[in-house]
Image (cartoon, rainbow, N blue to C red; front, top):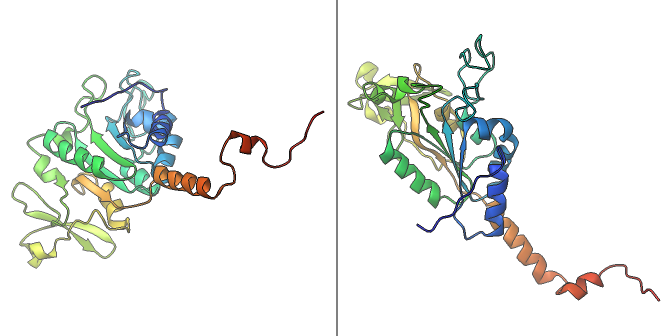
Length: 276
């Protein structure tokens, strides 16, 4: 791979990545960030790059703690967690990354676990193919300040029953033997077991990441154990006009119709005076 990377100012990666992409639309731009960097000091840049749909790829490592700055609670830390900056437990409601992305008009959102290399590779490939802002949340462990934070769903012994790996066009089944699934009960998702109450695989809803209506995607992104399995894979992937493409088209249109063709035209444009 022919690559180049650099560290940006803390919290400003989305703004810098936007500028890099707009200045050179042919580049494949990847922004690496964390739950603290993207959702706290960089929160404003984060939601607006998503809203604008700049064609960049954002990998957001979520370990629910400020790891690099030594253990303060972050915007995704579980309510009540004891940290260096919350010695009596946090009193704040945490952000849901998927909820925030979809609420900011996000067109692509996916989630994976750091230890699942095969799934992560598939998701990064889909993110790279997507035209527009893609956000991939990685449930990441911090062995120093928040060790085992995702073990309740990521541990090998329990992950089959506590995570749902979404596949486009396939029924939302999970469990060691795919014996569980999701159905739409009114306006809510509900976990069911195949064979109980007359439930068959035909009753399980199919995953469609390309559905423009974000309702189901929103519910999938917000599912939490123990009431639901945690959804992994590409949750949302819909088409939309990208900011960089729209800007390029606008510039070309203006250049074609403008009477200003060179620097002299610009300097002599509008009200001018001759000084004698």
